[in-house]
Image (cartoon, rainbow over all chains, first blue to last red; front, side, top):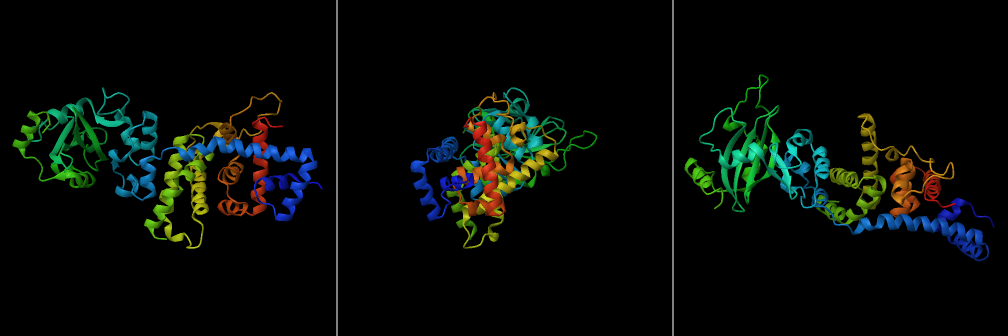
Length: 246
Length: 161
């Protein structure tokens, strides 16, 4: 009996009816060529499985777990980027780029990010997005109660978070202004959220700082983690005096 | 199926979705992005899933669509991507009998899309012909012919006579 290639494949795939399968099994005993055709298909299956089955045992990123539960960054909060929800531990620059590009603000954020946290307002270190350069300096030194109008960074409210860290909102001047929220971590400022502001830098390049310029999404981020009221001018100065450590 | 029930099922299915995506997209990060898009779309379309329908083929179908959308978007934006990802160089290997042998992943990446999807569904994911044909929205005869051609191309590229 002659078995077509499709029949041999269907045999290996477990798709033959009982009668044909039995006939093929019997034929294989004496037809070595047929047996080799079956073995060849089984080898291909085995090679594919040994290539792709290890994926099943890989750890699954928090990003995908969140997406499966409908709580991914995109689904949750529109176009705000929740940096701390991006699993950061093993992430390198290209991986971050891929995520950023998949998010609405990727184009905006990517140019702000630097490989090393020595230039630009944002950097990645140990898998975390941290303020750097002028932004880090402003967050550590600038007081909301006493800042110049044309400073590159405008600091908004400062407050204590539920985890007991000082956090501050800010707005960055640029081609498009970006508002964000950063919290103290050691001697660094860890970015919690970023969002493009709708208004801000005008066509003439004139920046329009205003307390009300904080985008609703950032204000909402503050609401989610704030404990008590924002710091007043006196408490803000005192916190700075202690290096933003309690 | 209620969204919380669907979420629980999707979490269970995640390892297989990642494996399927990895068989389609050469780059592991692209593959995970693909899974994320599929998850979001599945949750958004939870109401379309019939109560008696098997979940896995339904989500595999959504992931397959997302992959095809991605390839179209790449083509539209004229983004340069590796020729092997487009599946255009199939058959290059073996023509002169001296082509170097490819890894399984490279060989998969060189298959034309529809053959690659058929191979991924049946040989990697172990779906039945009926399920795979349903995922690809084609008759079973079309599925088996794509599967046969994909297999032959892989055997050639992998150095099986």
